[in-house]
Image (tube, rainbow, N blue to C red):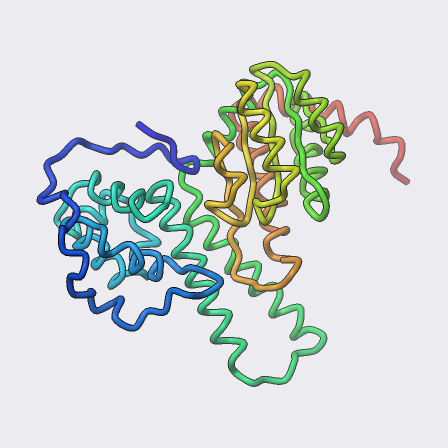
Length: 319
């Protein structure tokens, strides 16, 4: 078994037809790649596959061609379903994902979702429409949030359960984030400690490193970064991993650098394109709340007692 972005994926041993890379590097280019431009800032899944096509085996090419022809279906299918549809084993699908630079099938699905989101956003922006005002602006934003919630839920798999395993077994949890991720880290700390978990938050990069250096398993580190590429957050999670600490990350960018140092990655997926995504942050808030509630469902008596004690302590502060 291997854990790929929080999903335990079995790779059954099977016999694949012709797994040897083709010797003819000048073989005819498959139809999906004939006019594909790969020199671009963002490399879509289709562009990545086309760039690697000449190095793939015949079975991998067959799987790749099926995925390219059925991208909308793949995002809602399991690896086993894709393998069955292609007529090959799970191993062939997983090997293709890794051959083209993905960490696994879940990574491939997340990137396909992101590609579809970018295409949808591009189509909407290409239509010249007057900027909505008032309730119209709110409606557009709420629509983005609802689409993001659906995409995130469709791809969540068992990552929430695996993250709950970590916090349930941790004797102490450090939640970290910097910049615009700070509100989500504060929300995570609040949600977790109200359920009785020993949890604290640290947003200063220097103090983060100091705190992690003093931690020992089973203490855990929970890092939040929408981009997944913040140097401070990535380096800190790498430090935690080196010390043998269980690690969780919450990011809006599957396959980003921070996920490489996480035992479990939670993904907040949204279709919006702006410098500071609103829907992505809303989804992150919901995910940390879902994580806390999942823990409470496992330990209802402890969580309920902690919540009651916390709220009773401030009841006199309400008019």
